[in-house]
Amino acid sequence: MRLVLVLCAALAATPALAAAPPTDEARWWGHVETLAGPEFEGRLTGSQGHARAAAYAAGQFKAYGLQPAGTDLYLQPVTFAVQKIDAARSSVVLTAGSQIAPLQVGPDIILGSRVPQRPKVEAPLVFIGYGLHLPEIGVDDFAKQDLKGKIAVYINGGPGDISAALKSHSRGAQTWRAAEAAGAVGLISLTSPKTAEAPWTRNIENSVQPGMYPADPSLQDAAAPKFSASFNPATAEKLFARSGHSFAEVLALADAAKPMDGFDLKVGLKADVAATVSAVTSQNVVAKLPGSDPTLAAEHVVITAHLDHLGLNETGKGAPYYPGAMDNASGVASVLEVARQMAAAEIKPKRSVLFVLVTAEEKGLLGSKYFAERPSVPRGSVVASLNMDMALPLWPLTSVIVLGADDSTLGDAARAAARDQGLEVVADPYPDRNSFIRSDQYSFIRVGVPALAFKFGFKPGTPQAEIEKAWRSSRYHGLADDLSQPVERAEAVKFNAYMAAVVLQAANAPKRPAWKDTSFFKRFAD
Image 1 (cartoon, helix red, strand yellow):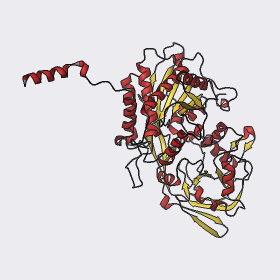
Image 2 (tube, one colour; image 1 turned 45 degrees about the horizontal axis):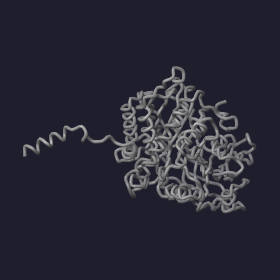
Image 3 (tube, helix red, strand yellow; image 1 turned 90 degrees about the horizontal axis):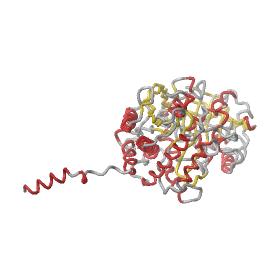
Image 4 (cartoon, one colour; image 1 turned 90 degrees about the vertical axis):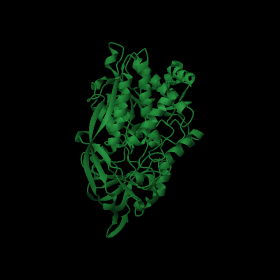
């Protein structure tokens, strides 16, 4: 017995038998497991779960030895208005003279919550085609008809001869500004089932979530309350029944990326919208790796991912919260891993690097908008933005999608890093998704900063495309975006190495990144 005890003590004291340090794969997946776990309850913007996730990320940055770079140590608090639509107490009807056709809130129409809703509206409906506002190339769907006091209805997409970047730019804030300038009192959006990213039933489930907009009026998209809604394409013929046109013909043109004209729908809409508005504060998380060059260290390359997700499941069915493992615990985990590796490297980048985990992406890019317009470092010092959102490590990494690669010299840096690692840079396979404006890099573009967004690459018609399509259909913004799904963890580590290489390319370049003269987005820098 004494010999056994001696042997046990000797083994316990032997350094060679200590637990091996975690691998890069285990570290990355460990962050995903933690962030998508029950402690953070789906990381809804402004929730205690999100605050705990922000504290976790700040703790990791501190452990890596990175400097706090928020306005409150590692945090940058941001205040939002929270608008919650009460669908059960709201009503919407179509009117034509004395005839009234009730709509079902949810099955037919989902009321928007990202701009202040008008509590009551009664107005004619006008179809305006794609709803594009691009006067610089002679395209302005809002100017072709009288929209004063009316609600404009549009379908996402656009003619094939207009670049994806231009069509993307025309969405979001641009749409609301064009609508206001034309005198419209509201907007209704339609989406082709061919390009829809999630089934309508999931849109209904997610509509119980509150929407948000900046508490500061100067940062809001619309200057005054507007009626905002999206319409179920399966029942959209109701909107076109009196117009002399059909939604089917509109869909055919949209799916073929053909031009289309607008027309009077010859029906009106009357709505009573029940909504409550409150305020909440959430956090961006910001850490800094100081640059090594005495001059270039004053400039900052920013690498971002959004920390927030959808929060608790209030449908009463299924799991208690939305894990958001790929959307976007995976991206946050990648930022943390790139930060750890760069902080531990002996040779530091010449420019400073900011690692920024933003809040409220799911509410309309609000956290990144706030940081881009009111950064915690001198505003002119931010020279590049690199963003990861749903990179989707679901197949072997042989190529990357680099959104914005043709618009600035950052694209050259991304291609150089790809060549070094044997990766192909492939084009955006679905430009009409407007992906370029739908994640946080676009907030930086709007203030003139060259920016890119990165995903695992695939081409239409390939097995990878089928995997991506199935993921969006079955898991995107759903309870199934959880820790049980198949994930290529080793491939995620390769992706992280690629992202670190792009950061270094941008941080060590002799000149700061610049927009190319051919880029539409150069105007923001000018």
